Length: 429
Image (cartoon, rainbow, N blue to C red; front, side, top):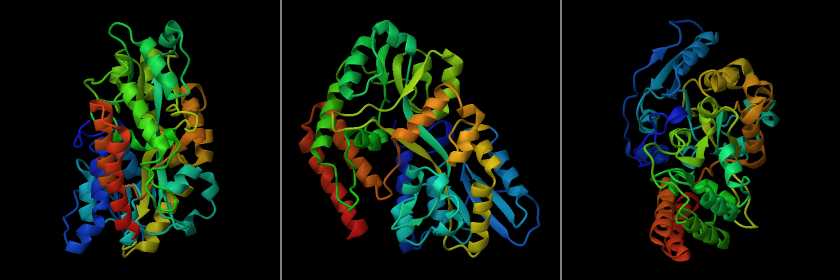
């Protein structure tokens, strides 16, 4: 996947790297006074209430989501809520829009430390107080900085490995627990036109950095803001990735990227990295002949990992309607549990972040959907809010040199470590 290639499904119209870059550019754009007009908007209702709030969404790829957002806005009685539905490069439009005179009061995004340092997002601890324990630790952690919670998770999108049970049985292999077992499995599973596994075509390191570090048992950034890139466990993990990608059992390219399950559904591979959003398509294709598993651990010091993507709702700290915006966000994403289940499961396939809501959702109670929920609870984690696009590029470049060109892992990662250290110094001094 190229940097400009959009995600499919819930990420339609976005590139993850582009999104991170634009989000991190908010503070810089503010310093230069740059700003662009926001994109076109729709109105949840014509008038009413005691005020008007502007709420921004990116364009979801799932049919019905825009109508649902408008329905939610119209149902709110304490203010008029204007919904802006943003096709294309949402990240750039949000970054410039937040600095304009028509900035949103409420917006969805991913928490970035520069949002906090530039005073762009409001703490939400007061509206979270009674329900904090009903969100997963991973979701709370990825929206918390220095003890304050800045965002409310809207949907959780765990990434797992899908595998064909019948192909595993025919090859005599079990779901692997370690990368050594995965390498052995993909060799056995590669027969004729079918390869063992597919993790993507282009940004196979950049798109999965966080998961690889988690599976190695080492953080990219430590709790005291140090680089973890040269941790011996990470160096060993990247050497193992080279062995994996050159094993002969990995599909190196396909017409669609890993975010799309087509390579798996078209039976090009026995294992594919993808997200929960693809489960209905895969179930329709194979019935019960598929399973899910976490990313295997790298070595005895590693651990299985499930990267938990998704979207989070924020309140613009610079909004003239700050209290009204917080009240609306609490109403929608904390109080209206029926809307939270509808948003996650009526148009696409995601996990509602409220544990109590997910526990009651009938679509998540059985089969592989229930298994994904369990794996996300056991092994799930999210991004470090201090992780920047420059770090991603540097580690991705190092990883590509290692797995594609056979570069020495420690030498290649030393260059990336310098970039990570420089970024951490910029962020934390």
